[in-house]
Amino acid sequence: MSQAYHAPMLTHPETSGVSMRTEVEGTVAEQASGRVVNDEIWGHIYFRSDMWDVIDTPEFQRLRELKQLGATYYVYPGATHNRFEHSLGVCHLGMEQALKFRAIQKELGLNTFDIKAIGYAGLCHDLGHGPFSHVFENEFLKRAYAQRAVSYRSHHEEHSVKIWHRLIDNNELDIEDAMIKRVSALIESGLDSSPLTGEKSFLGEIIANGRNSVDVDKIDYLKRDARNCNVSISCDLRRLIQHTKVIDNEICFRANNCNNLYQLFHDRGSMHDRVYTHKKGKAVEYMIVDALLAADRAKDYEYSNSITDMDEYLRLDDSLLRRIELERVDESDSHPEMKQAQEIIKRIRKRDLYRYIHEYIVPTRLMADYREVTAEDVVACQKADGSIPGGLRKTLW
Image 1 (cartoon, rainbow, N blue to C red):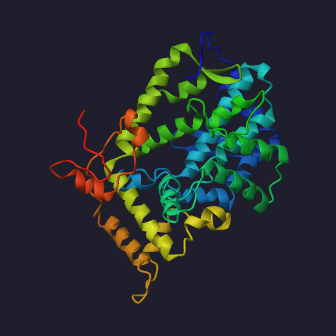
Image 2: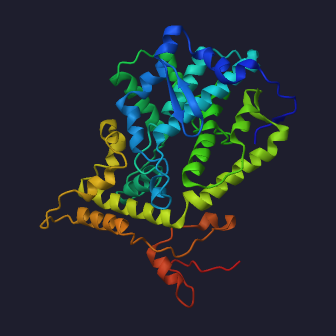
Image 3: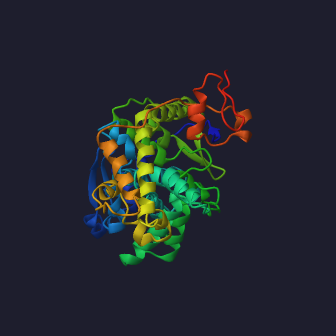
């Protein structure tokens, strides 16, 4: 966890409301061309014209078609929010925190370039997501490449950077090379291979904190997800942003805010238990992946190969399931995979979901010998002797 500091946090007229906002609004003409969004979480938030230049592009507007929580919508009907509004929220919070640092810590030398870079990174950090939230990247692509015995490594942050570059080129945006490079580094700052270094590397912790994972991305999605799923969380998320300070090039939290930090992780754990890993939601996710795998084989691996072709990748969104469902199938076709995919989707529509059997927490001491559980293991585990092929046995604790 970040180190804590004990100095009192002083208020500053430039750290709130309009006074702080005008630091990056620029000229009167630029202010006139900006627009205000009435966000369900953060209220009225202002974006200047250069941010709208990015927002009003096909690459960014695609985020409207990607639900933030994917299959969770099948369990929580209110979870209709998408990555578009989340990205607006992250941009707003990120710039707000950067402006606070600029106002109260002049020694950091933050300038308009830094603030704008944070804004762009907040907007574009999720451009690389595929359909159905993390399911496409973490489940579908992983299994699709494993079935083909092809090595696979992919992070949506890397796709976000590629699409960020493409967005600029395709829409002929006048953004300098130094800004493009800085934003790319900020987007990837949460990865182990983060290219962000130097005296202002703490800026990477605002959007994607790879050191302790407390960042404005998490703050926005926790509050937004909880609201739309009608689940209560008790952490004062806004206070976490307000009571921070940069020490030794790291974002730190006031010592008396430790309980609030604890509550943040408690709330995140609660959201994982109640929402993100809900057993019915996971059942739908597994069924979506199985449908995608079957359809992918029927389409000569068009979907899994899309990560190497950004033109194809950007055509994918949450409508993919409906497209598969409506695909014409020739009954004489020698490749029945598309029909198989459609049958799985039909089961989802009729809520004939995969059955939940059991969950198993693998003790740390057994992780070295742990292997993937197969269908045969599940069946064998129900036998009286508890034997499992391969030498595994049921263990009681």
